[in-house]
Image (cartoon, rainbow, N blue to C red; front, side, top):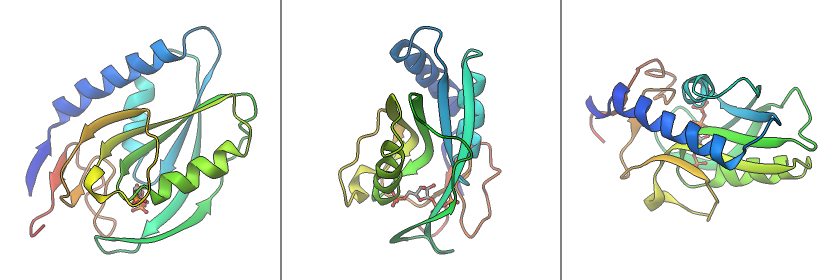
Length: 171
Ligand code: PRP
């Protein structure tokens, strides 16, 4: 597997994104992060460790891929949030936006819960794969259409634990 983004590159970029989020949401009010499982867990973990103390967390799980390498286009809710979003400044935290179908679904259902604001942070974006236009406020890296694994991203549930992003052989 070829390394596409090193641990150090990811760490530096995440600190920039955290600083940008702090600038966009100044003041004492809390910032509520919604991690999209499973892929978002490592990005979320590093992002919130670069933030101040006014952070709260929740987790949601949706699924759009089977065990293969391509999106089926179907989005299913696997686990809903534990807390409401009303009046909160909410940031959705995703590992990757590909076709945009998952994020469109998530933004629609979360916006309906009346947050004060709703923003989205994605570590990776593959614009060439987009099927629907979707707003992403914070993008870590824009990448070509390679099948990538690591740093939360899997192939058949493997490689999520890699500390870097790699391109899977044969892709
Ligand atoms: C991946 C990724 C995004 C989605 C992006 O999730 O984490 O949620 O696909 O694809 P899209 O833009 O084409 O909708 P996946 O369903 O593989 O679940 P996982 O996070 O549990 O690996």
